[in-house]
Image 1: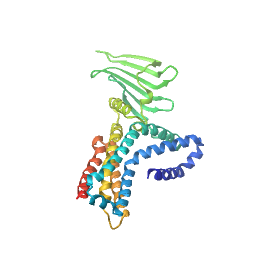
Image 2: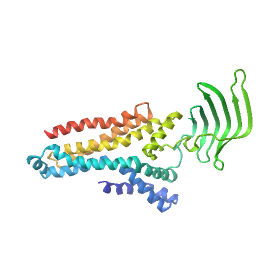
Image 3: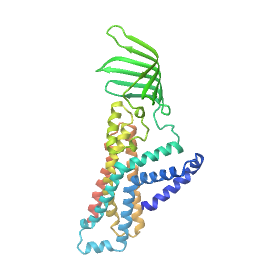
Length: 340
């Protein structure tokens, strides 16, 4: 089903984007690489849903041919009938886990870089206004505006604390990263050292500093979490928490989904089998309609709770696992009735 559906998605996407691709004169091999990454990204997202529909289609065929009744009438228990489905689901879940942890992040990197380079532009992909960041345990920096293209910022401020006490503060009209010597150049530099009674002020027109932070991580792109393997993502989230990032909810949703997606494979397999193992008057069409309806509800729950976690203080862990819990309970209930 994936092999049938992915070419349709590629055709629809290409028809929509072909104008911009031709306008930007994108090299053919970059387009081919983009659609390879496109295939991996969407296959990873749609794996459980298409497995679910495949189970319904296959089992409905068995039920319509009265083969399910023949199995159970010959003394095969429903649990034994379920076993090969669970073995198949285990294989698919392992593939989904491998995709989510390692392959999909690499594909997401190329997919998003192409999209923002040729199709959408860089606007909105990074926070560039009023950027705060805690670069270590003692230093907090701020710029009123940041330009990722030339790695420069306006109205730079650095505050150095020891405990809860401010020790000194650095101001500059501009900060710019110099790739030649890996230093930061500050223009119209002012340093104010806080004293016991009087403060000391030092002023220089230009000043070079070797700040211990990576300019690339100063304002991560909006899709940063999707491009990292699991271990890199865990470290990335820890760094962003120390910096006080406002995007932690989004990053943690991505992290928890890497594990929830394979679990959903088993839940949807059980629901699909239980629903379609009964021969119905409407045949396969009724089962597919019911299955597609459940799939849409599942996707709806997944998206709604994901957005809640990204845009509010709602727990990302609850948001990601709530659809699996609800549909897991539904799977147990439907399986119990199917056995009867």
